Amino acid sequence: MAHTKESVVRESMNSPKQIDTSIIFNIPRSKQQFDVNKHRYKCSCCGKGFFTQKNNFQKSNSPLFQSNDGYLPWCKECSDKYYFLLCAAYMGNQEHAIGHFCQQADWVYEENPLIAAKEVESGHRDRTRLSHYAAKKNLNVGGRKTYIDTLKHNYEIQEKNIITSKEQVKTSELSITASAVDRWGIGFTEMDYKNLDEHYRMLKKNNPNADNNQEIFIKSLCNLNMLMIRALQSGDAKEYSNLVEQYSKTFKQAGLRTVEEKDSSNDETFCMTLGFISDYTPEEFYQNKALYEDFDHLGEYVERHITRPMINLETGSNIRDKEYFVPEVDEYEEE
Ligand SMILES: [Zn+2]
Picture 1 (cartoon, rainbow, N blue to C red):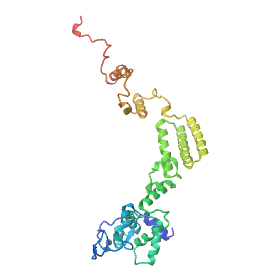
Picture 2 (tube, rainbow, N blue to C red):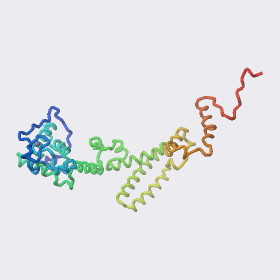
Picture 3 (spheres, rainbow, N blue to C red):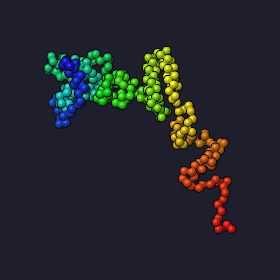
Picture 4 (tube, rainbow, N blue to C red):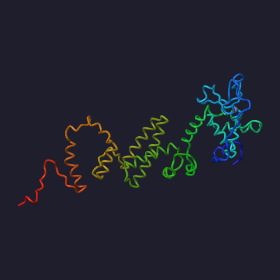
């Protein structure tokens, strides 16, 4: 790779952070302290007094500084001093040092101004790269103004970023598993993998015993579902309705089922059935006793003819019906 300014900056931004733990963050107080008779503004760090904010303090678009006329509360000199400490702490990585400062000042942290600041820096050695960055930070950043704007922007890009290799998943901070890439192949975005996996889990949950043949259909259905979502998002109604039709054909062909549709209690164990019921009508639903009072005494019937015999069957106990039972005959009374 050619070592252009761009590639050097990008490499530095993406390199792992290394910290020199011996660096102590200490900025001495100024000899020229704030004097209420001479100054109007005071640096929150060194305590130096100023008559104007302009030229002495840097600006930020963060709401945190809005009532300070948008100025950071510490002076430019202190920004530079702090930046040098950050550079030392990040083992000389200026990009990480600026990134850290951007987060504190709520400035955008972007590649373009970083490159621009590197270019002017080579001509003006007397000023820090941070101060150049402060001047260039609004250039070619798509109108983004704060660190939060950068954060949002990067998040959106990442979601639309197409995965081109399994290694990419391992090295980046994406919420995709390597097994998802194995299952679906490469060439999808993070969002696509999420949609595919979610639908896959749903179909597999409802069809836990799908055979190999059905497995192929299940994967097709997941792909169709992803295309349906894309068609919906792009507002392509015709494409969407075609896909829905295709989906329902494939679904029928595969012989798959949805749990809600069919009572399968005959094929399942009793506990599985109870589990399925509570999936769709949670027990809490019946907690309002006044509303769901047992008007036709079904509960009584169940208690008497189902629960009681079930307890006897499961535990080997011998609980009898309260009303109808053959009384135990006392042995001693037997003739
Ligand atoms: Zn200061």
